[in-house]
Length: 311
Ligand code: GRG
Image (cartoon, rainbow, N blue to C red; front, top):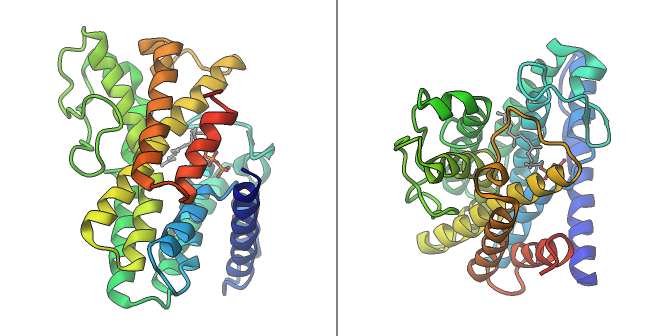
């Protein structure tokens, strides 16, 4: 466990340094937007970037995948900045300090998020890795961050009432793209009087909102290393299971601190704390199996199982 923590810390530091260099070195004549971007990109655990780098190395990559680690962390930072806005989650604090819009104002929060999102793609496109892999990587990044991924999940998250009433279309199905992290991948709302269908709505939301970016991280490492399609798929599936379990764990910890808002749909509310905990455990365990022992993603899953779920 010690070695793993050290390795994770090493990757975090490398990503932090590269991020600072990328943002401070970016040719931009407007100091305020740079300041808001630097502020928003600081302080994360860099889990997604670390998964890109370690998967790339584990699968035989012998170049530098840092541009993609930065890109996914820029997307992560943008998503948190926008998620904190008053029109979304309306959160005051992020990463232990005032959220971007609290420090710089709401308009700057929108713009800092926009600038981080666009810079992510410019950064990925500047990678020195083989161009066809870079293009595939950029496609994977866009897919994971957009309507079929994080943005779609955020829409479901914002519409719990509509989902309950059946007014919201089922949303994009994760079917076949990443493997089911929950029991059903249906993209039809089904009978919304049935609690299991409501639970499936939440599972879909978790897969898209949180699972998809972890899926993308592992997938990117594999694509950039030139792994065969089946290996890319397996890495993606491991990442999806990790992200799904990670989101449930976050909900469990929020609930323990009394931090769950009334109008937020969570798996805990739909199927009970104990059953949700079981799904988180299954998700991390499945991730371990798929990622393979010794891999950073498997050790990360193990770390959460042991330290946060007491398994
Ligand atoms: C605004 C398009 C858009 C999307 C936002 C993922 C998301 C979608 C919002 C985050 C909401 C949230 C706090 C979910 C809980 C689980 C989670 C993804 C936490 C943040 O990830 P960490 O813990 O964060 O890896 P750091 O700060 O370490 O990067």
